[in-house]
Amino acid sequence: MGRKLTNKQIGATLKKLLEKQGLTMKQLSERSHIDIATISRIINGKRVASIQHLEALTACLDVSLVEFLDLTNEQSGGETEQLSPTNDALSVMMASFLQNEQIDSQVLSEKRLVKELEMYKLYAETEEGQDVVHQQFERKLRSIDGQGSFMTKLKQLYTAYQSKTMSKEHRIYIAAALLYVIAPIDLIPDMLVPIGYLDDALIIQHVAKHIQRNTNQLL
Image (cartoon, rainbow, N blue to C red; front, side):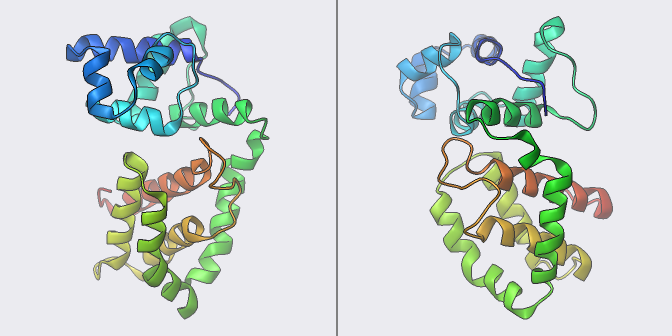
């Protein structure tokens, strides 16, 4: 996760999407509930956009966060190296936030995340772990109190976990991810704004892709 999208590149993509949608910054502000001064600074590359900002703004511009980041990367052209299949645009954004917070990017390496998942899978196989998912997921969801692709994917995984058609193996894998999100101790503390849920988002993304790839079930 070594490459970085700049504030200027992110702002340029937002500006292009605004023009495409025929929206003014005032209209975007009203729809996203983000004050116009903040939007202006983000578009002009003078402020770092948090994940929460980008999820709210992209939702109003009819693109997902990942689509937005892919578009930003494509438009950057020669300014940034193109991403490899194993290092998607979301990971590049993660790297940007991690660098800003002076956190070692290896904390969120795929190897480290998979290792965490394997540990939670052991707990997910127990009756206690399954009880925690059923009893605490809704409470955790309320504590996050947000919108966007991360929350949508989180809810979809929980629905898939409850499905009677899902195999035990895949239910355990999903439960492991949900337990990680529920757990009070993460690789990155949830209270660390704006990156506190980055590790949770990557875990959820990883498991959702795994389920889709192995069951052809869209999440």
